[in-house]
Length: 284
Image (cartoon, rainbow, N blue to C red):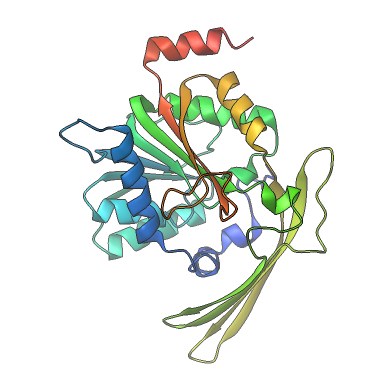
């Protein structure tokens, strides 16, 4: 993970308005519908099928946590960047949403609560650049997800790197209420390191507002590509979770191996405390 003076990922992530605009193409309410649908599928037969609490990790603007808060779920958002944390808190307050915001490292954090549901969206796990980072992250999350709770991880689909036909585009334009944003996030000129699987992605976000102002933010962001087998290995090493389901999209429960799959989404189920300790102790 690239670090600034205070451990945060700098650059575009110091510009919450631009980052939120760049990601505005996502249909967050529909993605939250999918999260809740997967929760229900894993908790059939229970009277209360909605999670009581959610923790969004590497939350940035915390859009998913804020939508869940608006639907009555007790929501907490964790991000390493204090500017992102302040932005998320301000947006929640302005919307009348109850949101707890924590500034902390997703690899090592301690909160005074456990959660029914944890989520990491938008391939934010790409900021974990080593296997040790990913294992530490999973161990930290497992300490905060109650037995039977879920952790949903959304990563880039491996086909984006391992196929001649990537599943996502590196260029897009999104119309917004106050203007439009043009984004280039990586692309053909960026090269993945064959040893570390890290790409230094060149990012450019241009925000054109209806009042005539135009501003561009440019950055170079290290991004780790994770294969499915590597993620599975990290889950086993960390202990605390089993894989309950895998999906390639938020719509229609598309399988990870479906030709239309464009994301790698893992639904992990938290193990009871004793079982989790045993799994971690037997990982060798």
